Image (tube, rainbow, N blue to C red; front, side, top):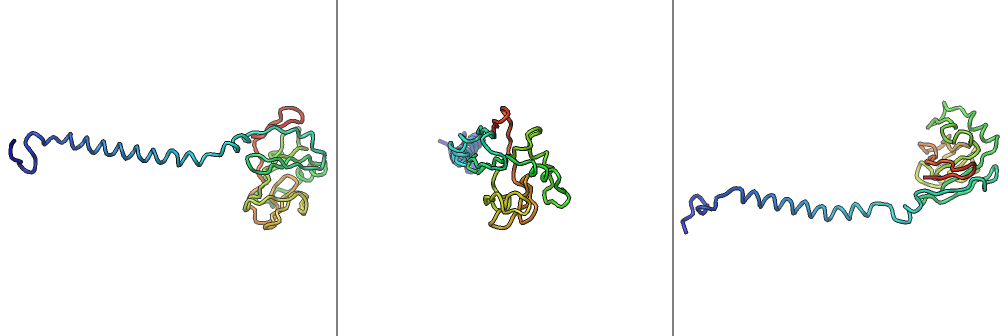
Length: 180
Protein backbone atom coordinates (compact mmCIF):
# COMPACT_ATOMS: atom_id res chain seq x y z
CA UNK A 1 0.00 0.00 0.00
CA UNK A 2 1.35 3.41 -0.85
CA UNK A 3 1.61 6.43 1.38
CA UNK A 4 -1.09 9.14 1.18
CA UNK A 5 -0.14 12.09 -0.97
CA UNK A 6 -1.95 15.38 -0.31
CA UNK A 7 -4.59 13.58 1.84
CA UNK A 8 -5.54 10.92 -0.73
CA UNK A 9 -4.52 7.34 -1.13
CA UNK A 10 -2.94 6.71 -4.47
CA UNK A 11 -5.47 5.19 -6.83
CA UNK A 12 -8.49 6.46 -4.80
CA UNK A 13 -8.67 10.13 -5.80
CA UNK A 14 -11.62 9.65 -8.19
CA UNK A 15 -13.99 12.65 -7.82
CA UNK A 16 -16.84 10.70 -9.48
CA UNK A 17 -17.13 8.56 -6.34
CA UNK A 18 -17.73 11.66 -4.21
CA UNK A 19 -20.29 12.95 -6.75
CA UNK A 20 -22.11 9.63 -6.60
CA UNK A 21 -22.40 9.90 -2.80
CA UNK A 22 -23.79 13.45 -3.09
CA UNK A 23 -26.33 12.38 -5.72
CA UNK A 24 -27.36 9.32 -3.73
CA UNK A 25 -27.81 11.38 -0.55
CA UNK A 26 -29.86 14.01 -2.45
CA UNK A 27 -32.07 11.32 -4.01
CA UNK A 28 -32.65 9.77 -0.58
CA UNK A 29 -33.61 13.19 0.83
CA UNK A 30 -36.06 13.82 -2.03
CA UNK A 31 -37.56 10.36 -1.49
CA UNK A 32 -37.96 11.04 2.24
CA UNK A 33 -39.67 14.40 1.58
CA UNK A 34 -42.03 12.75 -0.93
CA UNK A 35 -42.81 9.95 1.54
CA UNK A 36 -43.88 12.55 4.09
CA UNK A 37 -45.57 15.00 1.68
CA UNK A 38 -47.83 12.59 -0.23
CA UNK A 39 -49.90 11.46 2.79
CA UNK A 40 -49.90 14.98 4.22
CA UNK A 41 -51.33 16.44 1.02
CA UNK A 42 -53.67 13.45 0.56
CA UNK A 43 -55.34 14.05 3.90
CA UNK A 44 -56.38 17.52 2.69
CA UNK A 45 -58.69 16.01 0.04
CA UNK A 46 -62.42 15.98 0.79
CA UNK A 47 -63.73 13.05 2.80
CA UNK A 48 -65.50 10.21 0.98
CA UNK A 49 -68.90 11.22 2.39
CA UNK A 50 -68.44 14.74 1.04
CA UNK A 51 -67.40 13.46 -2.40
CA UNK A 52 -70.51 11.30 -2.45
CA UNK A 53 -72.52 14.53 -2.24
CA UNK A 54 -70.53 16.17 -5.05
CA UNK A 55 -73.64 16.22 -7.21
CA UNK A 56 -77.26 15.75 -6.26
CA UNK A 57 -80.55 15.65 -8.10
CA UNK A 58 -83.67 17.31 -6.75
CA UNK A 59 -87.23 17.62 -8.01
CA UNK A 60 -88.05 21.34 -7.72
CA UNK A 61 -91.68 20.53 -8.59
CA UNK A 62 -92.08 19.54 -4.92
CA UNK A 63 -91.52 23.15 -3.86
CA UNK A 64 -94.75 25.17 -3.74
CA UNK A 65 -94.79 28.69 -5.14
CA UNK A 66 -93.50 31.14 -2.54
CA UNK A 67 -91.79 28.36 -0.56
CA UNK A 68 -88.19 27.31 -0.08
CA UNK A 69 -86.57 24.00 0.81
CA UNK A 70 -83.10 23.49 2.22
CA UNK A 71 -81.12 20.52 0.89
CA UNK A 72 -77.69 19.47 2.16
CA UNK A 73 -75.06 19.58 -0.60
CA UNK A 74 -71.31 19.19 -0.01
CA UNK A 75 -71.92 19.71 3.69
CA UNK A 76 -73.57 23.10 3.10
CA UNK A 77 -77.20 24.17 2.98
CA UNK A 78 -78.58 24.60 -0.52
CA UNK A 79 -81.60 26.91 -0.83
CA UNK A 80 -84.09 25.92 -3.53
CA UNK A 81 -86.75 28.60 -3.81
CA UNK A 82 -89.86 28.70 -6.00
CA UNK A 83 -90.29 32.45 -6.42
CA UNK A 84 -93.61 34.18 -6.91
CA UNK A 85 -94.28 36.46 -9.89
CA UNK A 86 -93.91 39.47 -7.57
CA UNK A 87 -90.51 38.25 -6.32
CA UNK A 88 -89.30 37.71 -9.88
CA UNK A 89 -90.51 41.16 -10.93
CA UNK A 90 -88.82 42.75 -7.90
CA UNK A 91 -85.54 40.90 -8.60
CA UNK A 92 -85.53 41.82 -12.29
CA UNK A 93 -86.42 45.46 -11.66
CA UNK A 94 -83.87 46.15 -8.92
CA UNK A 95 -81.42 49.01 -9.46
CA UNK A 96 -77.96 47.44 -9.82
CA UNK A 97 -76.19 50.78 -9.34
CA UNK A 98 -76.31 50.79 -5.54
CA UNK A 99 -75.29 47.16 -5.05
CA UNK A 100 -71.93 45.98 -3.69
CA UNK A 101 -71.87 43.03 -6.09
CA UNK A 102 -74.11 44.07 -9.01
CA UNK A 103 -75.40 41.10 -10.95
CA UNK A 104 -78.60 40.97 -13.01
CA UNK A 105 -81.22 38.44 -11.96
CA UNK A 106 -80.95 36.81 -15.39
CA UNK A 107 -77.36 35.74 -14.54
CA UNK A 108 -78.54 34.04 -11.34
CA UNK A 109 -81.33 31.84 -12.76
CA UNK A 110 -81.80 29.61 -15.80
CA UNK A 111 -83.55 31.18 -18.80
CA UNK A 112 -87.18 30.09 -18.98
CA UNK A 113 -87.07 28.85 -15.37
CA UNK A 114 -86.83 32.20 -13.57
CA UNK A 115 -89.26 31.01 -10.91
CA UNK A 116 -86.64 28.59 -9.50
CA UNK A 117 -83.70 30.10 -7.65
CA UNK A 118 -80.90 27.81 -6.40
CA UNK A 119 -78.36 29.25 -3.95
CA UNK A 120 -75.66 28.03 -1.58
CA UNK A 121 -77.12 29.13 1.76
CA UNK A 122 -73.93 30.46 3.32
CA UNK A 123 -73.48 34.17 4.08
CA UNK A 124 -70.46 35.54 2.25
CA UNK A 125 -69.41 37.57 5.29
CA UNK A 126 -68.46 34.95 7.89
CA UNK A 127 -70.19 31.78 6.74
CA UNK A 128 -73.40 31.97 8.77
CA UNK A 129 -76.69 30.62 7.38
CA UNK A 130 -79.14 33.41 6.53
CA UNK A 131 -82.86 33.05 7.21
CA UNK A 132 -85.59 33.55 4.62
CA UNK A 133 -87.71 36.51 5.64
CA UNK A 134 -86.83 39.41 7.88
CA UNK A 135 -85.10 41.17 5.00
CA UNK A 136 -86.31 44.60 4.03
CA UNK A 137 -85.68 43.52 0.40
CA UNK A 138 -87.90 40.41 0.59
CA UNK A 139 -85.06 37.89 0.62
CA UNK A 140 -82.69 36.45 3.19
CA UNK A 141 -81.40 38.08 6.36
CA UNK A 142 -78.30 36.96 8.25
CA UNK A 143 -78.98 37.78 11.91
CA UNK A 144 -75.35 37.33 12.98
CA UNK A 145 -74.07 40.58 11.49
CA UNK A 146 -77.05 42.05 9.61
CA UNK A 147 -76.37 41.12 5.99
CA UNK A 148 -79.52 41.66 3.95
CA UNK A 149 -80.11 39.84 0.63
CA UNK A 150 -82.88 40.43 -1.92
CA UNK A 151 -85.16 37.95 -3.72
CA UNK A 152 -82.31 37.04 -6.07
CA UNK A 153 -79.80 36.42 -3.25
CA UNK A 154 -77.86 39.62 -3.98
CA UNK A 155 -76.32 41.54 -1.08
CA UNK A 156 -78.16 44.81 -0.57
CA UNK A 157 -77.12 45.92 2.90
CA UNK A 158 -74.70 44.86 5.63
CA UNK A 159 -71.11 43.64 5.84
CA UNK A 160 -71.25 40.74 3.35
CA UNK A 161 -68.99 41.53 0.38
CA UNK A 162 -70.65 39.30 -2.25
CA UNK A 163 -73.97 37.83 -3.31
CA UNK A 164 -75.05 34.39 -2.16
CA UNK A 165 -73.33 31.88 -4.43
CA UNK A 166 -75.24 30.28 -7.30
CA UNK A 167 -73.86 26.75 -7.72
CA UNK A 168 -73.40 25.00 -11.05
CA UNK A 169 -76.73 23.34 -11.85
CA UNK A 170 -78.76 22.21 -14.84
CA UNK A 171 -82.33 21.15 -15.49
CA UNK A 172 -82.57 17.47 -16.40
CA UNK A 173 -86.32 17.79 -17.05
CA UNK A 174 -88.99 20.44 -16.51
CA UNK A 175 -88.74 20.09 -12.74
CA UNK A 176 -85.65 18.01 -11.99
CA UNK A 177 -82.30 19.70 -11.42
CA UNK A 178 -78.80 18.35 -11.00
CA UNK A 179 -76.51 20.44 -8.80
CA UNK A 180 -72.76 20.00 -9.05
